[in-house]
Length: 236
Image (tube, rainbow, N blue to C red; front, side):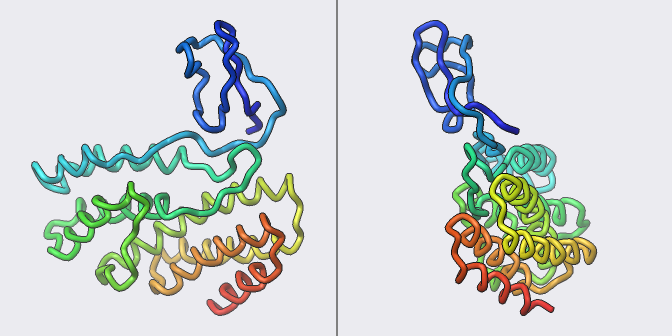
């Protein structure tokens, strides 16, 4: 959607950036009576933070299975509200959304299992400890039983990113970037069709390609575009 980037308070005339606060409430006086001013820009990046502290405490006091419903609900809210266009600017695919998507799938694996392994439970706890700090485990730390969960999680995160990237390209045409985006989307669809059953290297490659494509279209960087294409071509 397109939103005016500034708000003006009708009570005290204070102006602030809606893109930064995501709120119509005046930060100066607290009034809800404000109006949008300035030009409209494409904006999908809602102001949402991922705070898992309560869920870490819940797991510490009980079990992953007991904590799973509330944790999964908050993770779904976060990934649903995460966008990648801020005031017309295309943002890169960050580690926090990737970790949030993965934690959502990983905790589901443990919650549905009759006898989750120690490695699986430790991996969920590792994700839970670090996801809201923008950290995600290295591929060599992923248990074999969680490889598909990571593959599917990253495919879903890349799907959300590709939708916003496609929208951004509608406003900022780049034929070569559009073609590469279609290739990335085709790989992502394949991973989803396989329920995430791809190698960890392929999952990482798709993330790398998405980030290279961001650099290519935002900075008009031909080297980054070529690198994204090479990364994707190596997957065939």
